[in-house]
Image (cartoon, rainbow, N blue to C red; front, side, top):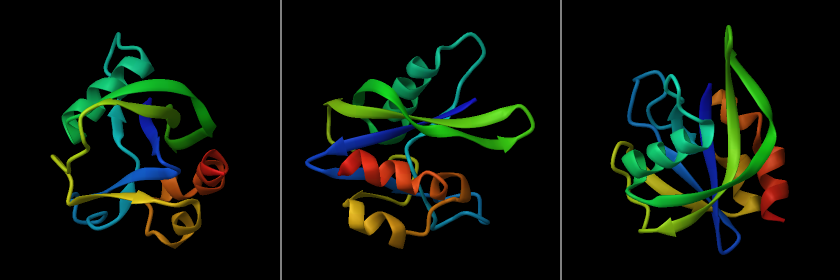
Length: 124
């Protein structure tokens, strides 16, 4: 499983711009990553946000459906709130706060693009 964080602050969603691989460099995604063996999805999300953004997050409920990525692997998004720190692009090109109206105009990774309607609903 891969997990992602829908971090919302002041009515805006945090997105990060990929630096790699070359085929996805410049595209946008939600923070997150792979759940390691024996790790709870929520714990993986906290770990990934610390690694990628330098922040702590408080994980809430699931947002939207699971999105199939490849055989036996899905992307699951959770709502999250900042628990401490200011997000920085530690492993990516940039971070950006997006309004609900801006979400559909961003060049998302394909799996994240599927979730745009659920993310817009989260912000409205």
